[in-house]
Image 1 (cartoon, rainbow, N blue to C red):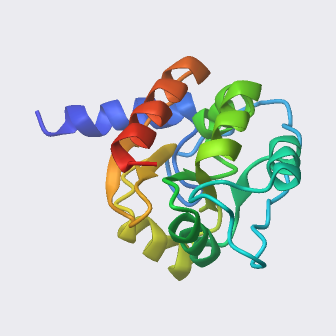
Image 2: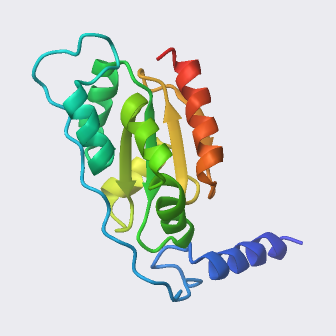
Image 3: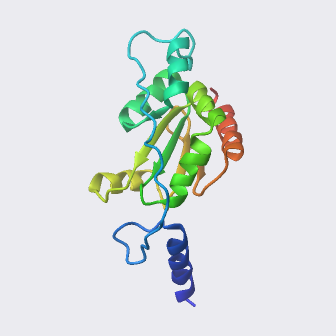
Length: 184
């Protein structure tokens, strides 16, 4: 009976491509290349916004155009605290097919991008490379598999977690719920 879960995982890894590159169950998956990730929005350190959680109009428009993703965790945490905004953390990897689908179909959706730019601090953690730093981030955020989306309040308390693909409508509902619960 113990072999069944292992075989089920093996089948899932073979179908989704979400086994790490060093895994013996990793199978090549043919897929079209996706466009490069959107650029990072830097939160300016000059002058505090008039209201908590608000960005100047020009900065907000630029964030909606470029995409809301931070790449530096410390800077994203500081921005969330300073702006009194909840955080969305996307833990992803280049070899993860569901991660790429989530990015292309859901996270790049215009309504999702705008909502994130207006109400959240978004952080993308790429764990493609097997390194000590990536393993530490995965351990710290209790990542059990990919894709993983974490919704945190401005203090870093976890509000919700998504450990699979979901469409833009479902993610918007989760984002709205997390925003309301965070007090933003």
